[in-house]
Image 1 (tube, rainbow, N blue to C red):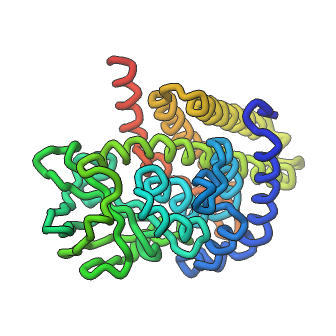
Image 2: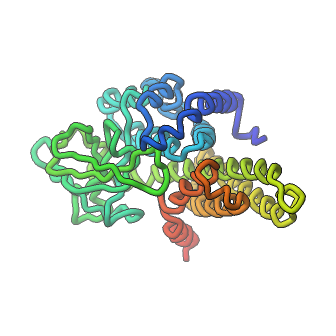
Image 3: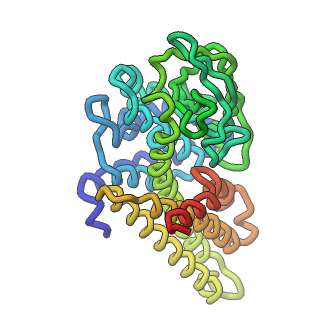
Length: 380
């Protein structure tokens, strides 16, 4: 199925990832959820397998793959039974490191990209602030020129990989009076003087570290500015499109796994003298779930095709993100409902998934923001 987009090389990658997830991740996720982080050794193992540089250039250790390789990675990692693990990995591969691969100069890429691809160092992107979430132009962190350096001051919050990452790509105002036209991105290393990170406790994604970051007179060398000064907003917006595709693919994969688990449960569970799956109300609910999942999958693949064809996909990716994020929340709710009281127990995977997926309609662009973007592109 979908042979127009998934060729032999994609299928080989998928089978390799399936084995890796089953053997190297699933057996450990309960422990990592308890500990609140995943070991650096996982990144190194994934680096050895070539998973961390699927779309990055070959000359830096990547595979130079296409957008459909990214979909395969997102779909398979999402089935690891811990959205926290998935979040930490895809933040590294598809949300943070592409900024370096696309806008870094040769010296920056030579210095950092091979180590990111090998898993030697972990990375994250720091944009969100206490008073600026989807409103990227509203950030208040500043980077003031001082000779051959910038002085970075401000704070970030809800930053995935923010506590454990060795490097972060930080958005800051270099021309505060210019609004969104005055944002730049900087490479900030973990040991930078004046930088600190505080781990945050959250509802789901327990295996990933999420942090509040503080920058107090951090001196950042000019050579650590990523791309052109005051162009960071446009870099962020461009990468948001890829990020939203990855999120949408993850949502569909989560939903498929939730449905598979729920069908198995409904077939085994006996109520009123027959299996739960033989009750029409349950059968229809599962049919509705299947319809929603397939609709989401088609939106994801349609958006990916548009990207591959070089078409403007801004409206379609916003539609995709809005639909898939809301869809997985509905599916998780319905699947837990079918599980009854058992679904509320931690021993059942749907309990964790129900908590984990709630954030998808918030992160990467809230559904309300996506709808505003769609309306704008409809000339409303």
